[in-house]
Image (cartoon, rainbow, N blue to C red; front, side, top):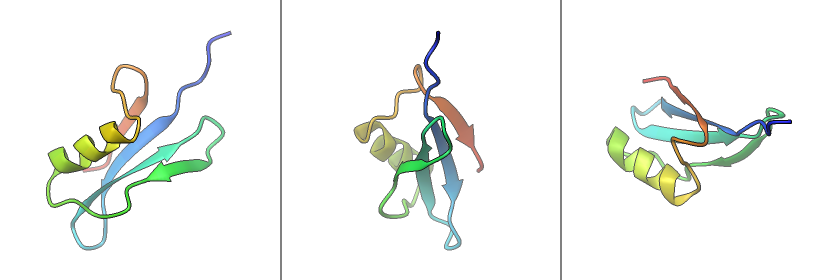
Length: 63
């Protein structure tokens, strides 16, 4: 049986800063950015430092 992977969602917050959120396969939030980032690449770099891997995780972009 194939293990379901976590989902990373990248989105802008109310102030226009970029953030990410990690959801487990059961829908529970297991991680998120502690701050907003001025640009998308900084946000993605932070997610990588916190376990994000494009080849392993489902990615949703809302920007």
